[in-house]
Image (cartoon, rainbow, N blue to C red; front, side):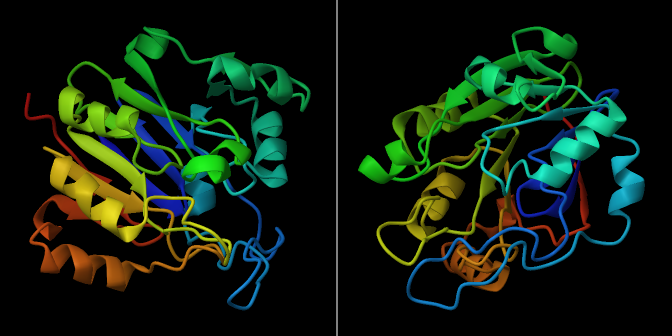
Length: 253
């Protein structure tokens, strides 16, 4: 299995014969409005371009997977690209109707699709009322024969469904958003640093942290996260890929 980190939450997952584009935000730097509302300068997103080699890697994609419909996970450029390439986007059934209106090829991601075990996991994109207002999303646990199991948490804070999946399913790889996103008012709408450390402690396998340094409201950078993980003695099982970096994993089961 290989994870090719592109930018933010967008990566290409090489799993068996599949090359899965996860949460595609493909627009140029500055093509989306700023998300930061208060306490800090608002900037157009994304803050950076896709890394070199992205277009070549995208040409190898066989299908795509979505956790939720926010524009930093599925932007207009990605929709146009999916339509042009005829790529099927696998989604939770709750997203089928609205995405079909965008003339996308969409399909519910169900057990045994693409010859793998598929388990959807609820998310909550922020605590309390904020999380409800942010809308529904879905994390995904994937098990393909002969490959490491992988849990893509999606944009969430730590809720019982997430901690239970990490503890009880023991995924060999967890991919989690680490930008500690905050609009400048109210609580973090992604795992705050304290919960990222808890997640790393709970995980029995490797943890890949992404969703950093690409959006104006994601203020936790790679250096500060790495320092916090080192201080807690957790860095040995955590990976914080740079944009464009590829990570390889082999199943130990």
